[in-house]
Length: 468
Image 1 (cartoon, rainbow, N blue to C red):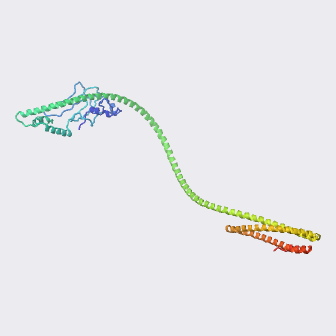
Image 2 (cartoon, rainbow, N blue to C red):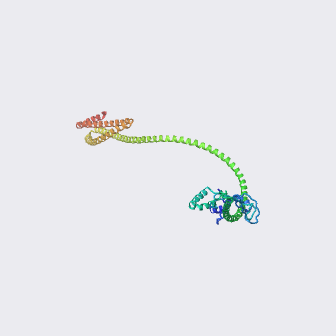
Image 3 (spheres, rainbow, N blue to C red):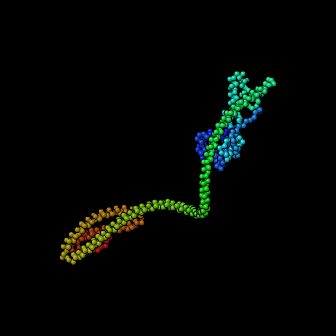
């Protein structure tokens, strides 16, 4: 496998490289050959060209004929940079591949090619195994289509190998003539092949000249780019110096900030420790608060229940107190009525004494007393009915209150029992007074008929008797 000429390679692949970029390559729209460059090529002088044709393998009895273009050309110094080579290229001929490597000589203008210096170009020819197999296959096909005479006539001319064809000598001069004829045929065929290759090399020579022109224009552009890059580099150098100065100041500030940052980090770690301790304490307090909250909720429920019970007890107590106050008021009223009745009895005694003192006015007093007794009887009967009704009503209420107090509060039951005893005492006093009035009426009636003096004495005696 051999490398081909760079110009032909770049011409085939120019459209795939895209537009020119500094240090990478340039695209020629007319399918010209443009090699790739780097920045080191800018320091080189304009390239010259020299051409070395391929050398043919030496055959016995034939001298190699090197080809060199005509013209007065000065040999140029050969240098190695840039060296351009490429492997993946299309073949120049159907059954051959080529390889090329050339170097652009410095300080050489638009000079022609040189045979000694310049671009070295090798063209070596060999058959590939695939082409050999293809040709063998084609030979086999031809072998079947030709006649025996044709095959016998064509067989010596088909071989192109440089080795001589061995033939049987028929006479003293027959073998040499056959060899010379075969050799002349081979040389003619080689001349035709070399002529075709020469035409191709001439076309490649024109392509290389176009490439050199393109390279010169690229060099001018790259020189301008290089100068512009130098100017920008100088600006960058000044800027770099300024940046170095700023870097020193920044380093000082960085050290100061670094020390402050370490101090701040230490303070932050201390604060973090304090925060963790505070968080732990707050967690403990929150857990305790949650426990107290749950206990307080239970206590609140119990307190609400106790408040409801206390409210009910207060309501019952207030009701009992109202009943006691009402009973007290009624007892006071009855005591007042008893006092009034006692006062009334005293007045009656005075009246009786007046009756005893004034015997003359007895009849009138007797009539007044009878009228007073009748009115008193009526009042007593009415009051008795009223008192009996109130007594029954209060007795039922008292019994209900007793049962309620004994159930709710046994301690207050004793107080209520005292009130009950007082009511019973008042009832007893009432019955005794009524009994005394009844006895008084019964004792006064017979004495009214007997006389005033006896009536006064008996009336006084009845009133002076103690209550039962």
